[in-house]
Amino acid sequence: MIQFFIKKLNDMKVRNKLVFSFILVVFVPILIVGVILTSELRQMALNNAIDQTTSDMTRIKTRISDALFPSVYVSNALLVDHRLNDLVNRTYDSTYDVVEAYRNFHIFDSNVRYYNEINDIRFYVKNDTMLNNWRIIPVNNHSEVLQTSWYEEAIVNRGLISWEFMETERSGSERRFHITRVVHFPQHQTYGVLVVEINTNNLNFILSQEALPILILDSKNNIVATNDVDHLGKNLEEVTISPQLTNGRTGTFQDVVFDEPSHITVDHISVPNSVNDLRIVSIITDAEIMEDANKLRRLGFTIISISIVIAFILIFSVSHLISNRISILSNQIRKVARGNLTTYSEVEGRDEIGQLSTEFNRMTKSIKELLEEIEHKNTEKRVLEKRQNQIKLKMLASQINPHFLFNTLETIRMKTLLSGEKEIAHIVKRLGKLLRSSIEVGGGMVPLKQEMEMVKAYLEIQNFRFDERLEYELKIDPKTEAIKIPPLIIQPLVENAVIHGLENKIEGGKVIVETRLIGDDMIVSVKDNGVGISTKKKEEIFLSLTENTVEAENRIGLRNVHERILLTYKTSNGLVINSEQHKGTRVSFSIPLNEDE
Image (cartoon, rainbow, N blue to C red; front, side, top):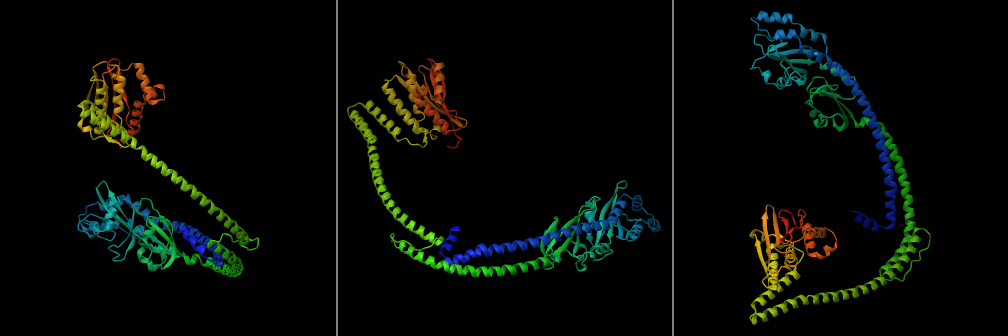
């Protein structure tokens, strides 16, 4: 992206570049400053409006809480009122008894008359001996009210207050604002549901004194009180306020309300011992917030526009003067582009264009010198490539020697075979195979079976050399033959056993090579019945495996095997040496089968 922009910029004429620079360093910064100042003015107006709204919300919330207090207070009092307990848990023998009991029970009527904030109080109870007087409402298992959501929720809430905007028998299809809660009578193991209807006219009166739209919402986003009667009883979705904007959130948010971008401030009205809170929502349109800021913005943009026009005229005139001198320099550059490195620019002046002309002349000279240097480097490169080809030919020729050796051994084997020396021919064949395996070994892993063929060839040669004084036995578990191991990791151990263990043994020398599986490891051991190793010598050998000592220089084979095992298998302990003097030596190592190579 940057390269593309640079390319487009380089393709522009100087005049256009100057205009572009003007836009970039004058117009854009002025525009940004104007936008920032306007944004700051807007933000200041917004912050002031939010602060004022927050202050108003706190004041309104206090007044609303005071207006709701009588309803909460009455419901708390009735929760433990013994007169209500006696009234609803009594079994009545006649209608007269019920009417007489109602006549003596004045608590509901007294609270409705005393508290203007309460419209009605009702109590739903399962008592078939009572009558419905619109204050005490008996219900049974067939009553429709038992199936209503507010009744079921009141039972589930276990005595906590629930704010409900709902329809009742007395209100018909009109929904009204209520407190509902269950009242338990433990001594009778009965309960009833208390419903206190709140006088929302008081709430609406409090909100009507505010200039901004104010809404009181229940937990289901129903508008239970507002200073706009057209929205009373509606849901937030019906007045174009997204419920997701206010559900469970407080603070100030932006949304489109009443088809206008607005700021919405939301706060909770928390009442003790209630399962759901009320919310108070204040709405202020952006137009009201930005009225003064917009005036300042228009004035600022007018001044900025005049300044930009004047600056544009000046920059256009200056760019025309500069482009003429650059055209002269451009003609000289075209000559150089055609290959004429002897040309020089004659543009005068000490300004940037004059300096550019001077640097152009220096550049032309440098290009000429650079081309000469490149030609010299190319000559050296061709000489170097020729020498490398000669080295490759020598390396190819050096590969003849191993093949010559193998062919010579094969010729000797055939002549001895024709002479009837089958044993010598066989040994020469094994020697050739051993040499080939040693020379052709690579850095990769090889199957154990291939390594053991090399070990067997070596032991046969040594058996021939010692004139049958050496016996050997290969105990190879067939399950281990396909296991991959580093090359030349067993043969040095066998060679060490033959040279150091059996060299001085007159007869009866024996080497046993064994592989077996134990758990997740393959154990490889090389055992001889030679002279063994003394305790002191054994300590020197152990030391030589890990440190650079004189003994280590004499034990290159063992140390090499030990280090390769440790490098290849991180969980292996390397070589383990067990020996008793005059009884023989056993060298072993383990290869973990479940470790990645």
